[in-house]
Length: 245
Image 1 (cartoon, rainbow, N blue to C red):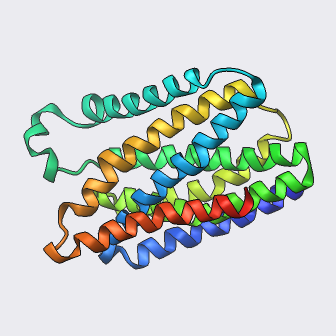
Image 2 (cartoon, rainbow, N blue to C red):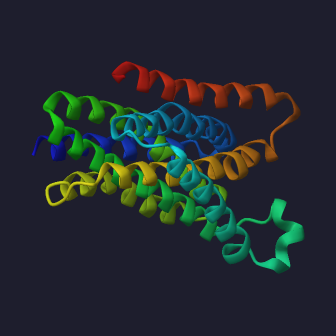
């Protein structure tokens, strides 16, 4: 029950982040620069250390998770290039936006939010102290998840109304994840592979989608500011993870 209640804090944090992105959507490129850093930080300071920790406890190699990470990167790349992007528009791709790409990117973050809720629930299965620590980490970066979800939707020409709908889905996801742990527990090896696959998704979204878009229409004098915001996004996740590590 405590895990479910704390997951509602993640719900509120996600909505808050999304509302922030919607309110300041005129400055979406600055938000996206920060978002790219957040995605990089989640992979480097959250997912990969968690994979390493799981591998150590299970006494198995990280190779499987790294293969899953490469697979996640390539699967999203393939979906974007061969399914969501029409070949007839390839030569215009730099200026051509695909709402479905934004939806798919946002759905990847919804999956992550669901697993955040699962992590809270599983943490409380270990001990209340572990559950609270995990919940604090989740709430800390779910504000950014809300910004990321809205930013990815808007940059691919989805309407604000559609962006809000996806934001609500992202906000509900951790609550559903926490509730799900009342009925199941995920085997550690399966969790390790999932984390690797999801890390690949985030790397692709951040490096090939979000970061180029952040710089695509930037004024000449703003490049330094955008790079600083990307650095700040990664540093934010480093700080959040460090506080509960």
